[in-house]
Amino acid sequence: MRAGIIAASWSLFAILMALQSHYQRQIVGRPMTWSHIFRAEFAYAGLWALATPLVGWAARFPLDHRRWYRMAPVHVLLCLLVVTAQLTTYVLVVPPVDPQWQIHNLAGLVRNVLLMLDYGVMLYAMLVLIHCAVDYYARYQKGRVRSSHLELRLAQAQLQALKMQLHPHFLFNTLHSISTLVIEDPEAAEAMIARLSELLRLSLENTGAQHVSLQTELEFLERFLEIEQIRFEDRLHVRFDIDPQMLDAKVPNLILQPLVENAIRHGIATAGRGTVEIRATRLNGKLLLQVLDDGSGLQGAVPGKSAGLGLSNTRARLEAIYGKEHDFVLRDASNGGVEAAILIPMQPPQLFLAHDRNGENQDVHRRR
Image (cartoon, rainbow, N blue to C red; front, side):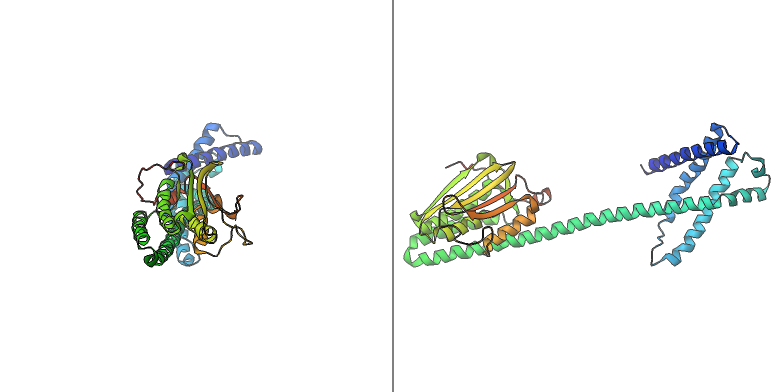
C-alpha cells in the first residue's frame, strides 16, 4: 500500500508538471511533443519516487527544538547527496533538447545539475515535512488510543469502587434488622440469616461483573425482599410488573436494590405498612426501570436529589457508564408515594460489557 501511494502521488505530480510544461512552451513559442514531455516528467518523478523511501529514512532524524542543531547538518548532507544523485541521473537519462543546455562534458553536467538544484532541495524538504506530518499524526492517534484505554481503566476502577460500597451498605442494614429480631423473634432472625446467606452467595457470584441481565438482577432483588418481608411481615407488599422480553437486557449490577431499600426505608417504614412495586418495560427503544412506593411522597425534598449513599451511588454509576444516554429521576408518584425511574439503553457500552464475566441462570420471571 505504501509503495502504491508513493507511485500514485508521483504519477499525479508528473501529469501536472507535463501539462504545465506543455502550455508554458506554447506561450514562449517553443512547443514540444507530448511524448517527450511525458517521458521527461515521468522520468523526473520516477527518480523521486525511488528516492522517497531514502528521504523517509532520513526523516527519522527529527529537526525538533531539542536536537535541531545536531540534525540540521545531517539533513543538509543527505539532501545534497539525494538531490545531486537524482538530478545527475535525470539529465543523463533525459538529455536536454535545447542546444545551449546539451551536455558535452563534465562542466555541462554540473551546470545542468546546479540549475535545477534549488527545485530538488524544495522537493526534498517537502518530502521530509510530509513524512514528519504523517509520523506526528500516527503518534497522535496512538496517544488517543492509549488515553482512551487509561480512561476506560479509570472508569472501571471507579465503577468497581462504587459497586463495592453497596455490599457493606446493605449488609450492615440487614445485620441491624437481624439484631432487632434475635430477642423478639428468634425464628424470624434465623430465617433472615438463612436468606442473608443466599443473598451473599448471589452477590459473590457476580462480584466481578459491572453488568448482569435484568433476570439476574431481579433474582438478587427477590432474595433481598424476602429478608425485608421477614422483618415487616404482612405490612410489606411487593409487586413485580416485568416485561418478559426485557429479562435479557443488561443492567448495572445492584442497580435496583438501593432504590428498593430507599423505598422501604422512607416510604414503608415511616408509614408502618405499604406496597413497593418494581416495573421494567421498553420505552422508545430503551429500558425503563421503575421503583414505586405508596408512602407519603418526597414531602418537600428536592426531586432527583439525595444525600443518601444508595441514591448518590446509583446516580454516579449511571453517569459513569451511560453519560448523557441515561435519565434518572426521583419524583412524587401519582399514587401519592415516590417514584424512582431509570431510563437506559438496552445494552451498555461495549467497552464495559466486554469486561463482564458473570454467569446467569435461566429462571424466568413472570408478571405477578
